[in-house]
Length: 359
Image (cartoon, rainbow, N blue to C red):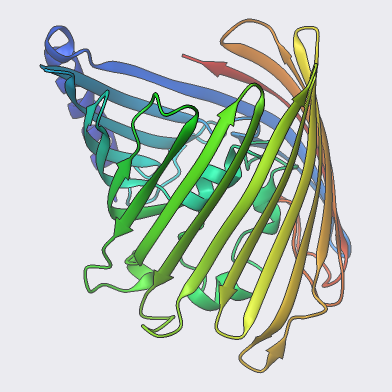
């Protein structure tokens, strides 16, 4: 999509917000996050760069709601990812790549939500990741479709459904259920191809939280023109967390399955609240098994360790520093983003420091 059209869309949205501000409570918000990063990969040396969204993804959000009376409300949420290092949007032809939803909600009825949004498994997993799935220490480093495995087999190099799905209908449980929360999602493939982001998905999530403790389970099943109808891609999450004074401990398990290949990720983490900041530690492991076509992936495992500190300057601004290392086995090629090419089976390491501001 031409940049001129992107600008036009943004200006039109802003104009709509301005005209409707007094009528429906429309707000404009977002996050600006940028960091200096260095990534070193075995066999390729190192690269230094300015990156966007290492503590929390940079974004621009337009959202609003209208009170319909009787406890009902209608609302919308339009969210576009931003690359602060270049000024570009991150979604290519999808201007509102992060979220585009319309909803009807009620305090006792829950919420019905339509459009592009997070899948149930990602909601469950990302809440357990102390690095929020981003940055040099984010769990996404061991969950993408770069390496040969079940995710790449099911989606190729196209966008996958481990984070979001388009064309979805969701129903969320209402609040006030004693800490129980969750929802279901159904997304239509609409007869399209995986290359165009057309994936048919059905998923669900159920969790409980209270008194600093929580547990969650989630599952999703996806089919597209690459998987075929009878060999779906499956994504399952089980996790929990507990608070011990200033320390929050988390354990999470996630499995990706497609055809003859399986990837099982295990994450253990701790967050220690110290003064105006948080000290974070995470340990991740990705175990692959089976084969993709004629390629055996069973030996291509990886381990990641991440350490970080966030210093809150105010309610809306924070400084942060993070470091991580990935050790690959066999022909594994999991990497920290932003580095040079990695020799298969080698080590990828990265450090970064940045500033985050919410508005």
